[in-house]
Image 1 (spheres, rainbow, N blue to C red):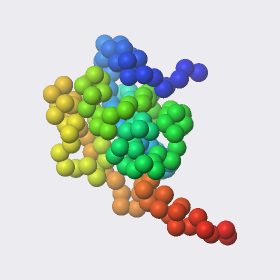
Image 2 (image 1 turned 30 degrees about the horizontal axis):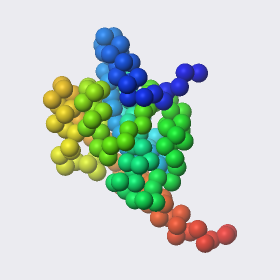
Image 3 (image 1 turned 90 degrees about the vertical axis):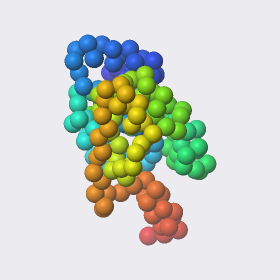
Length: 162
């Protein structure tokens, strides 16, 4: 089986061919630490926005910069392998920046998807729109889990041996 995990340079070359075929390119990005149903639902939503879904995965070092020195829980290569196993994901690559602007400039997606928790103006909006794309926000149900809450619950219950 051919790996879905690629370098950004490989992704750029793949996209050139896909765009020649008239395919709609969708991107999203994130840490995807401790994969849960919210991640799966998000990636399925993203895939429905076009033909090809490309996921930018924050590297371990970038997560430490914007979340915490204690994160991520799962190393980047393992996170990439898990995400690549999902049917909705066509390609995945790891990036070191805290924001996706540099890779969005190279990929030039037709659609870039973010969760509705980011409804304020995103730093990446300008670059996506400048290249003819659009930002789509995925509505997030209030009861949907998030990694931070899962980690908190694990920490709170770690002394329980029942």
